[in-house]
Image 1 (cartoon, rainbow, N blue to C red):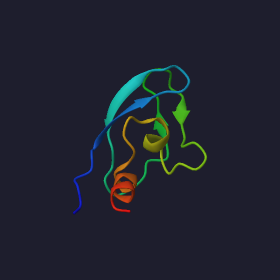
Image 2: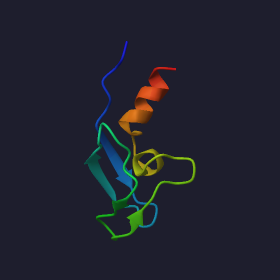
Image 3: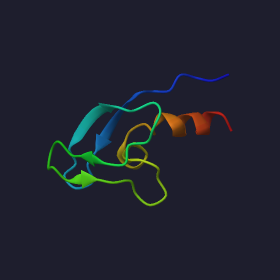
Image 4: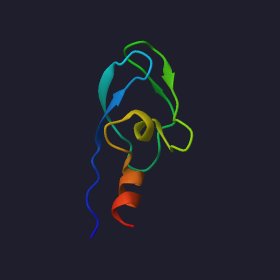
Length: 70
């Protein structure tokens, strides 16, 4: 049984600590995010598919589905 993905994730900037809650795309990974606190352009860490998987409180919807459906 598939569960509905969580679409909101709170990103925490690794440079300034600013937090912002954003809506994640459901059909793609987001590779870049400009911090609304310091303006730094965030990119995924090595091995992660997107900024939400690296810096978010919830991983992106495609990864949520992979984790729940193994």
